[in-house]
Image (tube, rainbow, N blue to C red; front, top):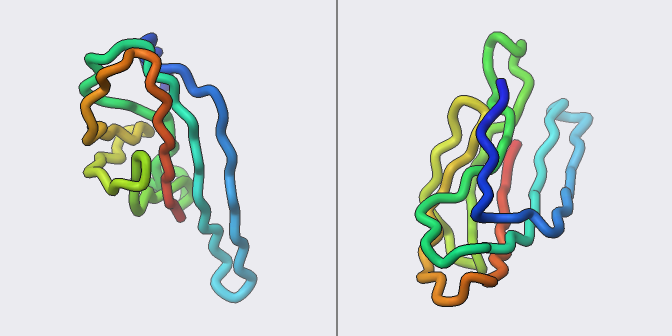
Length: 104
């Protein structure tokens, strides 16, 4: 499935921190992303993150939390997209947001 491109933002840097457990056979992680906001009227940010499903035999991600600039935000993770509403007012259209996403 191909999701529509969001021309209002640009991912300028990302890093993944992964923890592997032989005891539980589970991978947990954190994605840290720098997002350049190209406009100041962004109502939602959508990131493509594959959901864990039975069709994928339990493979995929379960997003546990999302933070922007160290502020926890509400999110929805469904149909291979994680959508969030930034909690801050974007006064400057060249604002860079720091997003931290915890997943398993």
